[in-house]
Image (tube, rainbow, N blue to C red; front, side, top):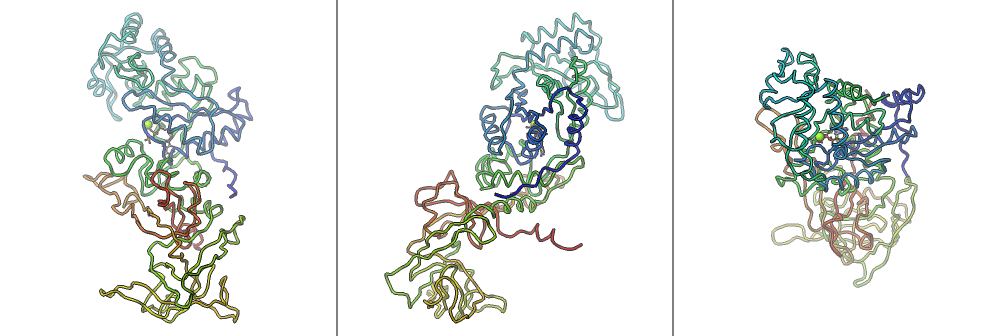
Length: 563
Ligand code: ATP
Ligand code: MG
């Protein structure tokens, strides 16, 4: 329903357009989204998905989903499945589905090729020695004593590595480049290491694992990718990327382009850190609605459109920048505003008795689901009766000047209903307000007085007898500081978790119309916020609602301010 702005022409799309115009790659633009299946996808991945799949769509190209599963210790099939679900939920379908772990044989062949060309060697230094001998940014590294092994010796060792003859760490395969190279990554880059480990797809059949640099660019090349889009941390890896695809003999090989990753305030976007939140019990799981994971956002009620609009709006740039949480919420809200029905839910109920409404009687009021500025129509009947609930906050016994809602002697409008006037306040023995006595004006049915008299406030309500009990889960920022990745020494991200990131309202009262809706339905609770029924914990007759986002839009306000 909402109109997403056409994707912006960022510097990457400019390059791809140029590729198409010049025919540089002699093939249609091809991209890939290459997650490691070591966790659930997060909102940062959504940015990458939109970019890669978006380019393929816009330029009539292809986009593959490739699992970069070359680290046997951390990967799992459940992550493979969740990642596919999340990509599809975002609205994309891959042209090819690949696993780097299916390329082990091909990568091994290239390893042999490099050895035969004298471009790679087997190093038998310890991990420690390799690290020390790499040098530093200011000092050159030291050649390994094994650097000048003959091709035959290297080939023999490599074959025996593959045959599983050696224990972990006994040897590694390295590119033979330059131990004094100004780019540290080019100092005889590590290509393959021995790992006797159960890989989630290959079992223990394969004892040597390619490292990121060796696997990534060549996997791109196998798939005919043209532009390999990655985040800025990989800038220094571009040189080895190019070196490898060229040494391996690919014609018109893919090239790497880096862009700034999404960094969102008040959250962390690293699977490693998110995994800790899950494992250490700070959240209920990967799909906890407070998590910045796609699964968490989905469960919270965010729509794929809202997420896509956000990712498109922030665009793609070379320069790192942080994004305010309010920007994200703005796009989520903007999309929900245009598509979800409005219903009435009382969060903190206060009983109201209409003393002049006949006891035992009731009626149905027609309430529209959408305001006039939303291009959807529809309505539902809302039961009205002598006893109602209103929000406790909508009543004040001694109101200040600017309080326009209910107070003793004051008249307000019940949304879609009648004008009511408060006549009495009933208190319990402790002096707490127990209920209000009010009168209603039968002539104001539908919300207007025939005599033209005005009221200053309109409040929402539910009929006490008809309302359903509901649990509300109100979410707030997961962290108390904007950047939990950048903390003073001695503090870590788990120290700055927001203790109030989840507030449970056990007994809200909601109008009965929602009882017939399927789980996963989204609403605006009038004057309260956007909510979705929780698909996991909702029970028949006892729905649980997750607050997706509040109604207030601080970001739009800020943007509207002059200067
Ligand atoms: P994490 O630290 O969360 O594990 P990662 O980069 O290691 O992130 P991968 O699964 O390897 O995660 O990433 C898959 C793709 O998603 C990569 O191309 C990566 O550049 C991209 N990506 C990851 N995080 C972000 C982010 N915050 N913003 C944009 N793209 C991202
Ligand atoms: Mg990673």
